[in-house]
Amino acid sequence: MTTPYVGRFAPSPTGPLHAGSLVAAVASYLDARVHHGTWLIRIEDIDEGRSVPGAAEGILELLRRLGMESDREVVWQSRRKHLYQAAFDRLAANAYACGCNRREIADSRLGFGPDGAAIYPGTCRNGLAPGRSTRSLRLRVPEPGADLVEFTDRFAGTIRQRLALESGDFVLKRADGYWAYQLAVVVDDAEQGVTDVVRGADLIDSTPRQIYLQRLLGVPTPRYLHVPVVRNAAGEKLSKQTGALAIAPDDEPAAVAALQDAARFLDLSVEPVDSLAGFWQAAVPAWARLLSLREVAAINPPG
Ligand code: GLU
Image 1 (spheres, rainbow, N blue to C red):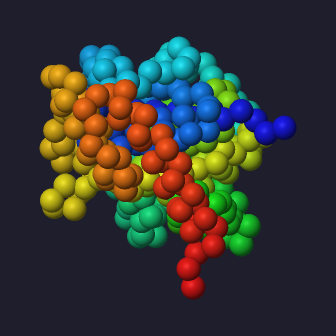
Image 2: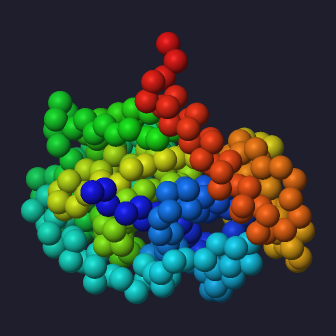
Image 3: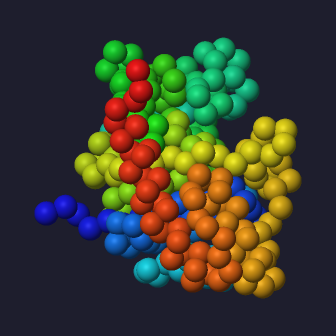
């Protein structure tokens, strides 16, 4: 018997929902519906310094107005710190205190990983140098040669990453005292029984670190599907920092239009509809058709 499908949308409430985050929400929601699964919303407010008061409530209200509601109670990362601490305690044998700041890591000139973060050179691996104090807590990754993590993305196919060379030992607890995204997301996906992660391709380079953490914690690895990221005219990923506009439909036709834009971006052929119910009715089979093309292509790449 296969495990029943559980998917999720996990927005960080750093601002209102924009066209980029809507694409991830719609894709994860449609994937859950096509698989007759459960769809969850998790508010990723673990970085309390970046969370904007009221943003999470605004996102939840907007999703509800668009017809997307969590099948279970919404989970908030800021209320689950005990779970991250417990997971860290289980990883402690593989973790160490690091005294380096950003500049020191960048100065080591090992370059940057695919996600743009400077590769950590392992300075504090064997203990803090005299006079240094703990800033962050890092996880030791395997030595080069034993550090390959490989997974099959449902759209992109085989993805490989050498953790030692492309990431280095990564942060579990940050210098500002917050638990790192990589740890929180792995703990939550496991604790919520998530079987399928559908999210933006900007996170594909984080996935190998997450899979490595899942292995250390002895929890299952979900299936992954990364959808393309929406960019603005300058080629930048939409975000609050790049000036993305909030989605704020004031009536049903505007809500349908926002969803149609997301569907078009995902390459879904959804005929023109004038109601939310009509949109979802057309979008679910359209997603199923897209999967039948894209998932086969990912397993048997051309050439
Ligand atoms: N909270 C992350 C974001 O808003 C998404 C994390 C995930 O889906 O794993 O970009």
